[in-house]
Length: 79
Image 1: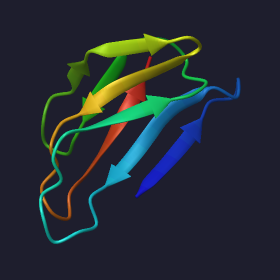
Image 2 (image 1 turned 180 degrees about the vertical axis):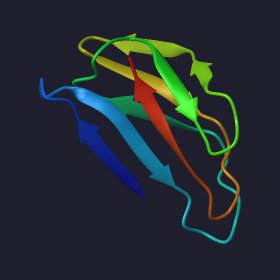
Image 3 (image 1 turned 120 degrees about the vertical axis):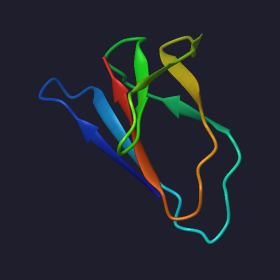
């Protein structure tokens, strides 16, 4: 499940991700349209944010989200 949040400027600020399954999700790539910049961090409860490598494709960027355990959440913070 994904829930985007836009800033006042209409650009993507965060993308909340929830693994709502009973199994682990392997790493997967996410395209971020209208992102604020090319710096993206993966934030999960109780852990330090992790800066992710960004791949640019024209006006879009994409990142690989690390594997997620069952019923866990995190968000991508775009800076």
